[in-house]
Image 1 (tube, rainbow, N blue to C red):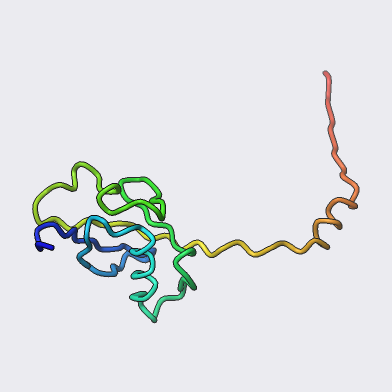
Image 2: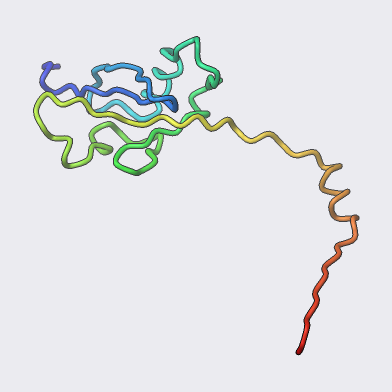
Length: 120
């Protein structure tokens, strides 16, 4: 594949540091990008994703879907020659399952609501 067809991407982390830039084929999927980010994640960060599913990628204000390709995610203004596209990375761990005991306690707890009106 000619080098001019490759898209250069870097990924901005939560603290302002970057991972990359790396060159990708326009046919690379967002899921592939996420896997690369997890493998290249700096070891000195407090927040570390455990898997690619813990990461959300944002480009041009949109959360990118795993099945989309790099070419489908490019914003029109990113067509400048030899430009590096910056995508933002949000680490959002998968939600843990809530304990059913806690839900039962909440349901059994009597709900108290207070309302007071004063007419003068």
